[in-house]
Length: 288
Image 1 (cartoon, rainbow, N blue to C red):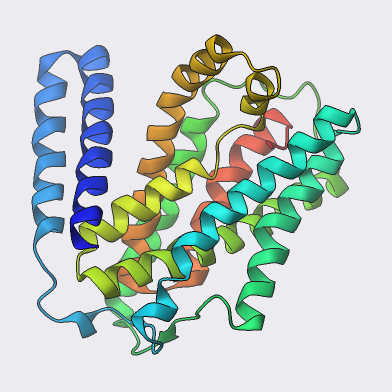
Image 2 (image 1 turned 90 degrees about the vertical axis):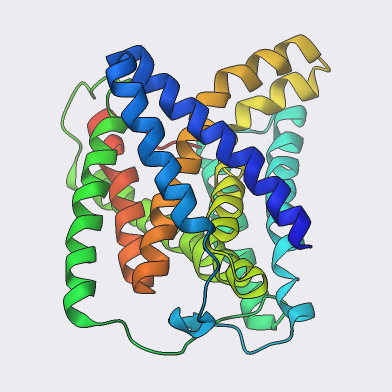
């Protein structure tokens, strides 16, 4: 199992480093790319250090390793159910934006909640509280970074033509807050914690959980070439989504780092919601 974690982690880490160094190279040339490569190398080196004290993290599972291992098939299962339901609706011609949003909320909120309540999905427990002074510093840094990410997400978007109504804003904020909270429970609170507890590696836990988080955001539009059995269109979509995939891995990595540092579900859910709400308010669209 450890060898599998290591292989997946190196592949994902290499893709992330190449992507962000390439962005720095294109934007700033070698004076920007070299520092970016050095910084990312230092981060990976620090994370590769084994955890000397596994009790230093504030959350842990009390169940057996076999119970914890249920986390890993559950998440791909959610993704498969999501794509299958939307795919069927599109094939029979009953799909709509509202119905696809309802399916997204059902798959990523209702089903995980049912898994936890039924005992099929393990639930970690807080072992200790983080220091208040350090937590406050990390909270401030997390909110600032989340706002910066949210603003960056607006760059490729067109602004909405008119101001949103208060009811629309309430709907958007509620939608993203609920979805962000559910995703943080699934990918950080449960999955990241499980991998770190089993492997004893922050690096494995961050990279693998962030990659799963990114894959869960595959655009539903990728169903079209699958339904049409068009491999060329599928390859085109995969290439088009590759930069966003790596970007989502980076986003999951940051949220995961804050989760490890603070153990605060409120913080990571709030930061995640901000990253989604800012571009939504700017562009006026609810992504599927």
